[in-house]
Length: 180
Image 1 (cartoon, rainbow, N blue to C red):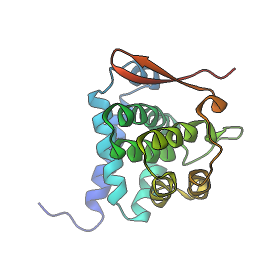
Image 2 (image 1 turned 30 degrees about the horizontal axis):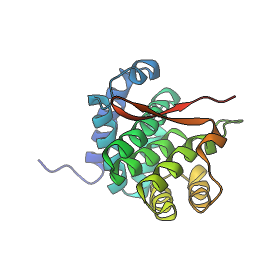
Image 3 (image 1 turned 180 degrees about the vertical axis):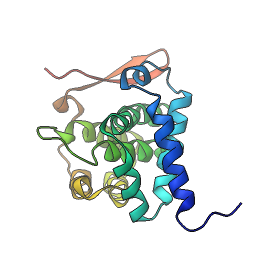
Image 4 (image 1 turned 120 degrees about the vertical axis):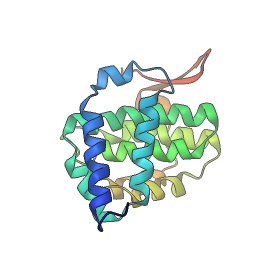
């Protein structure tokens, strides 16, 4: 069935927000890695990556803060999966998810703390940080796009400087935030 122009994306937005409404950050955070929720959010990000700029804006404007926060958790989880699977695609999805979470940047939020994890993981995987962050910026909202581009060009990013630790677990690498 073919939908009139724009209707398919409106349907995607409605289905996505309905799915996200059933999740709380704490419940998602407790899910095994990977989980069905990770796959669903990855599919949403994949759709955003192919969407027109106006559609991406509409999608992000449709998300209440609690639903945007889920994309922040997704970003962290996707970065972990990227390293475990040596998969650039997960890293890009996670970075775009982090951009969705920061579509509206609250006062006093230090977005660099989140971005540092992606910068570190990209270098660990041999991924060019400039290319990765530029690609994510192309799909990001205005509030964070320039910041993504600038952060990808930095050469002074150290994981520990932003409160992150890399842990080795039986399941593979895990990143833990421990701001001191």
